[in-house]
Amino acid sequence: QVQLVESGGGLVQPGGSLRLSCIISGDIFSIGVMRWYRQAPGKEREFVATITTDHVKQYIASVKGRFTISRDTSKNMVYLQMDNLKPEDTAVYYCNADIRRTGTPMFRSYWGQGTQVTVSS
Image (cartoon, rainbow, N blue to C red; front, side, top):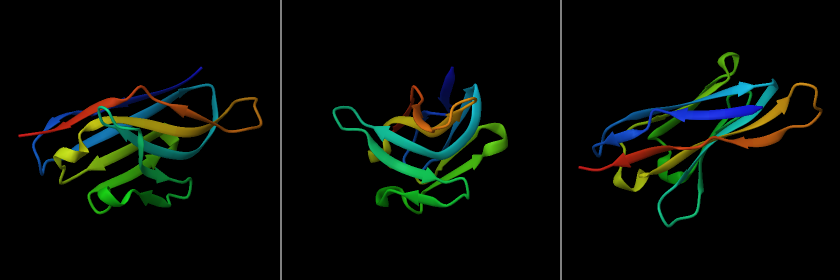
């Protein structure tokens, strides 16, 4: 089995900060690109940020300068530091990663269960 579990969500006021964490466990040989997505009620899931094995980062325009993605490959973890949060950031945030399982030749994509982020006064 391969599992991704997010944590760190919660209720925060506009302008506040949260740090999301995602830990990956299971029969893992290698972890490639890691990503964060989010989905607001009634909306489609959207890309938020990605980070490569060489720590090259990319963000959706609406979060650039406010969010920072990082990874600790030795701990099988990816993080999303969210600063200056806005009400429009309210969503369920999902961790995603390309993972090669032990004994398999190919990478495939895995998803976590999501963690709720609510930005409100």
